[in-house]
Length: 296
Image (cartoon, helix red, strand yellow):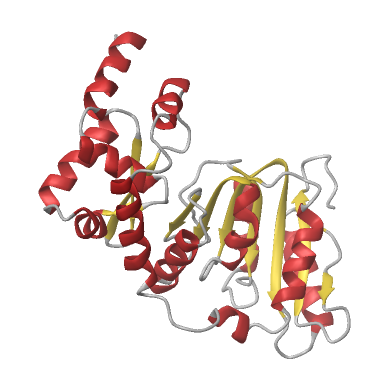
């Protein structure tokens, strides 16, 4: 059985390499895949993969698959030894600064010039964001899951107050753009994943805050999607249901939402219309019906 001293000695050995320190410094900016790391560091793919394996074996990194690519990131929950080791990395270092600039340039080159497309395509987005902030400003966000995250607009809004933030979307291009947006926004606690909203790869009761981000109206089975969100919600957690009102029939959508929530055994508050006059969004906050915590 490995003792704490053995573990520390092994981690010191792994960190006694300038290239591995450069990798750790990059992961403080967010998750990365091997191909972009080879371009940033100017090293071969086998060399980078070997270094990543050593860092994973030392308990400093975790890996996950997103579509066709394998991504690496700092472990979300590390022990006190790992936190102390990571804290030793300097905030400013010429090599780290150069790597960070190359990564930002590489990610930023994939973004379209001009304003975020989401701002142009979704009328009423700013008042919707203000309404979400009204609900979350006095309550901790905790662990956040955004289902249907797109380019990550809700992640950017809430991630700075979250312990961790995960965005799920079936669109690979949207996830790629979201990673770039979140890196440039300086939000390293965010992770993007491909996922089926009816069967997400997370344990029961994993999240304090879940956002169903304009996915229910077009869903084949809105009740199944709500049931899956309910499974992932911690007792006392909150579910935010966002629905875009395209045809102006907010009353019909509100009735459907109430029916879906009742079938999924989720306690839904009456939807808030955003903006109040001529709404373009409905926002409803829900809790699990099997908890005593009422919706905000």
